[in-house]
Each structure stands twice: as structure tokens, then as C-alpha cells.
Length: 203
Image (cartoon, rainbow, N blue to C red; front, side, top):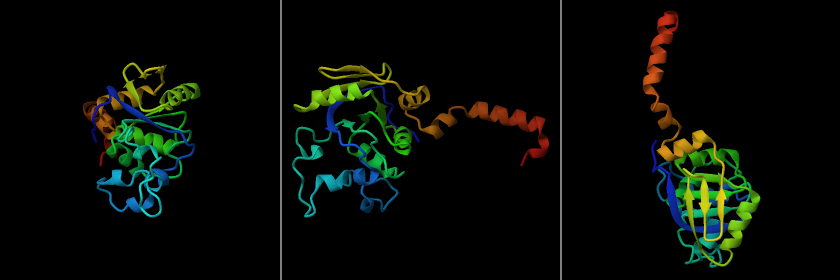
């Protein structure tokens, strides 16, 4: 699968600093009825965006007109815990979120992000704290440069680390299958050599 390469992106950042936001909160189970990835933005944070009567919760960040459709989300620790549902990542991306910045993420969720083209940045606690302080008074404009591995806002310039293979895949716009297919010729050459040396195992 291919997706839009992530090189440099700019946009508004919203803050959702609560700890241990699980995938059922990000994408509630009632929105998991299909596998076509359509309409999941409607379910994103549904239990936080609407009350039990279906009315919009005005003080939730995604309902605040100032932060509507943020491109980046600054999250609390252990974001995406609880389950392996990939729909959570799909819903975030359908809502326009292209990067998450937090101190830690649940492992499977973190990998699901990379496989779908959503950049999840594990930043130092002091960096996240500085960005959240910057966002306390209102929306902040942010630039994330994956090539340079920097996060820049009006008051913050931070460097972040990322695994080289994950960085290259995001910058190429390729998931694990796409990256593997880039090596088709080398794989075919290996197979030919291997079967020539071990003809008895050829199917």
C-alpha cells in the first residue's frame, strides 16, 4: 500500500494531553462494522465529542472552532493503548490528523501508525510539556520536518529521534509491503541462486 509521502507538513496543532487514551476511546466499537475504511472520521473520539443525548460537547478540543480539523495532535502518555484495532489510525487520518506527538505510544498502535502513513513522534517529556504550554492560550501553528527531524512552533524548536527504516518508509510513502516490493529484483535473484544451489527444495 502507498500513501502520501511525509516530508514537511504545516498546520494547526491541538492538545489532548490525557494519559492512557485507548483505542476504544479513539474509535468506539460501534464504528467497526466495516473494513472499507469509509466514514471513520464520524466515529473519532465519539464518546468525548458527544454526550449521551447526542449533543456536541463544546469544551472538547475537536468541537472547538479554533481547533476544528487539526493537522497535528499533541497527546498524553501511552496513547493508543487497549487493543490492536487499526480503525483508530484510519479514523485519525480521515479526520485530517497526519502526526501525533507524545512521550509514549502503545506498541501495536505505534506500528499501525507507521504502516498507514501517520507519523507518531516519541518526544522527550520536556519537549511535549513546552509544546503544550505553547498551546495553552490557543491554537498554535506547527511545522514538522521529517527529513530534518524537527518540530517548530512559534516558541519551540525541538529535535526528535525516529528509527531510520520507519523514517524512510514514511518519506517514501510506502508501507512494509511497498518497501519489500522495492527489492523485487534482489529477491528474485536470491531465489534463483538459492534454488540453483538447492534444486530439491524447489516447489
